[in-house]
Image (tube, rainbow, N blue to C red):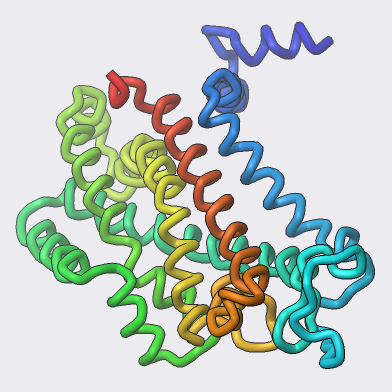
Length: 301
């Protein structure tokens, strides 16, 4: 049965849209699995997702916010695998639950920036003229500032908190997607099949939504995956400065900040969440490289 399903997914002449979509996803998965860096990145990201989902089953019954002042800054041991912080909270448990905050920020930012970037880029590329000029100049304004600096400015204006951190990061992360979508749209709009759709009387919105946006998605998804590491580092930077998740919520950037004063003597307080940030960022970078190889093999030539 597995073999017949594989043949159905790999059929060169799909009989339905569903079969074509599933077949394309299956080919992409096979390509990722045959790409060593992409496979490593996929494993790291999958482990992160599983840790975030099953954190209550992995925390050994220790709450991430439970304080034990008599056991503060304890070294890693059988009781506390990653040691404790300045308030006696278990760093292992807080690292587990910190993955939830990281994934939440990444997911929310992705949901916001991809549609914004696609909308701005496709409109500018297809309509051209003054619409293109106005939208691209606005994009250039955002690109003129370093992302972290601009995110800090927005976060400071909006106030601390996860929601405001997501908004601040999203406001600074969409311009690259707009530029990619615009470049793709300009190329696609000159294609013969778009001219054929125009001759059939299709409206501008139908052409954009049904033909151009789907063709721009692969490039945007690849760029989004590559940008995940930057999003995570920006979120950790906001948390480090106290503008992200607020205490007692476990967040990796805030955990690194909490241990900076004792980094030489109690290295585990900052090092453990720092390693988590590094591994997750590496995983998303490797996965993004793998997706780029799958969706755009000419990039590697």
